[in-house]
Length: 78
Image (cartoon, rainbow, N blue to C red):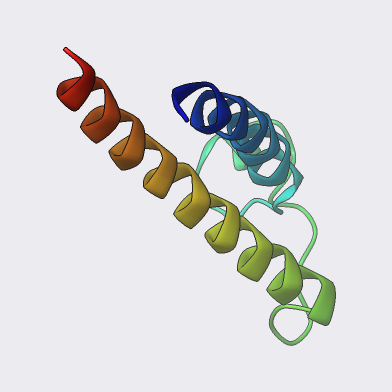
């Protein structure tokens, strides 16, 4: 069981990194420093961005559940 949660944790960690890097910069941060603030958004977020947000939140929930489950399993096994 610990091995299963460890594998899921590793996969979800990589997915979180990729998904977060795919998000568009919101402005005011490091993305503006490198020219990311030049483009303007013309009416909010697109459907693709909203779906990316939903997928990111879902993967983050899976990641959090794996962290808690591994913590409990390792506490019980020791």
